[in-house]
Amino acid sequence: MGRLDGKVALITGGARGMGKSHVRQFVAEGARVVFGDVLDDKGEFVAAKLPAGSCRYVHHDVTSESEWAAAVSTALTAFGKLDVLVNNAGVLTFAPIADMPLAEFRRVLDINAVGCWLGMKSVIEPMTAAGGGSIVNISSVEGFTGAAGLSAYSASKFAVRGMTKAAAQELGRLGIRVNSVHPGGVLTSMMLSRADSFEHVDPEALFKSMPMGRMAEPAEISRLVLFLASDESSYSTGSEFTADGGLLSGPGY
Image (cartoon, rainbow, N blue to C red; front, side, top):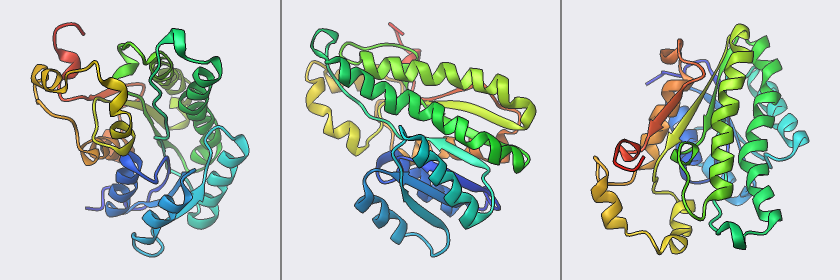
């Protein structure tokens, strides 16, 4: 306990799934957290269940530059500084390229990639003022390999992987570390809600092909994010951290 004592974190997409797990894990380890989402009822419920004074929930559309400014301002006003950003917010859309409307392709890129870029841009000044910090960008195994029906998602997650490395080059001398996390299958509401889109996949065969033979629990990803947010990873920047149960280690990847 206490691995994030004294740190202030901003986490996007914190109302459910992995984001909610990140928020809970960070608070448990001593961080003060501002977290945002567009699902206000769920976000306010999460905040109400955490210790008083440990966090703030804000409505936060990550495609909005003004809402990024407001979220950062909340962190500075409520807690005095900003040390950590977790760019977790994202959407998953399944559609073959031939059937996907251009507007939907752009929507996925806008949330998953542009939202991440805006987040990094928004925290440079306060993190520099704090003497440095850590940015953790949530990508995916789809940031390494594509899959049929996931052209938009894969494009966005490859983008997150690339901009992480560019940002690490730019921000290292300011004391700001930037790393990406690449989960495989995670048991979240977003993943389960899209299960009908993957009818062509045999889950039993997929799991048997994986060394660990199962999907991840959100808390397992949160522990990796926590490590990168903490001073324990002080010499890691511009790096990719995969948590996929060995999926990418197998034949065909």
